[in-house]
Length: 148
Length: 148
Length: 82
Length: 82
Image 1 (cartoon, each protein chain N blue to C red):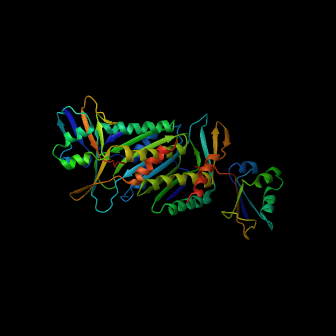
Image 2: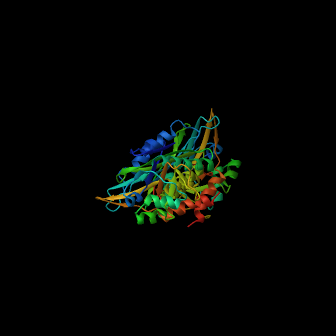
Image 3: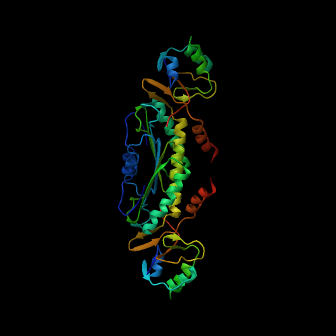
């Protein structure tokens, strides 16, 4: 399931809801990205490309499910203004065994970082600075296209 | 922090407590291992070597913290009898960036599987079958000794 | 009417997040950029950068051929989500 | 007195999870195994398997030298936790 929302969410509750009633899945991996309270940043603002966002995240999810058959996935990505400590993005993957869960969750995050249409702005006081994507994120995503 | 306990725990609450009040950590990865309700297994029983268990898990935790400086870790491992769907083991790692969190959480689980003194027995009716470790678990752990 | 969308920091350079325009007959992406940028020379140069992706009708434009009907054009700078 | 601990499925083979014994003077791990197994020949063979680890005083035994004081000996079959 994919949710793109401005509302804050509760990572622990999302993790528990995701696993509720499943007795066939031995291994669940979750990732949560939080706003870091570095320097004097008072907030992070994420802009996105509305309906297009769900489409693109959907493509990433389908790729993961094809690559690791049998996994289940849950993705939440927020947009709008968030304070330090707040969750931005949540990914959970469950499967029968841990290797698939770890690898698929890593793949989902590497792909979201470089392919989901979001743009980040760090707010300090009344100034905003747009964040450039990092070379390490492109490198992380690229490894998946080189591997079968 | 390391907890070795027979009591059931709540993975979502553990994840949230672990991140409570942190604003310097951008990325948290959690792993939860659940009892799989396969075949006609009615319960899983885990035996361990009491005080020795904490010592061994502590060594694994220190190795992770040396390898990925700046991470924080949280490990729970249960022993005793558990029903299908119940959580057995929980690992959470937070750090500034996602790569360290993913890699350290994978390392912790690969190491727990082969180095923490636990023995599993699958209970079906009134019969119990001891589980042999899997070759894939040894292979997963071995990769970490080959890499710097 | 066609909806023109400027994403991320492009909206600050364009002076708006989106606007509605009546597109003339256009043959290539270059002509589309020239029309959208109008007198704004720095915007025209920026939109032509290879790092800026053009999304037409919510699909990435592949090749040099514009679709017959253009309901929406979005210009995307490099992403920084997650 | 020394506490002898049998872990995992070894306790079923040994007939108990642990017992207290008065150890005689022993020079090697092999002598320790022989004393612990007593008449139980199949247990003796099993404990001598390389896959079975001997933990003395909560430390893995390295080499062939027994410590002077042995408070606890545990026999561990291959682990299957996590």
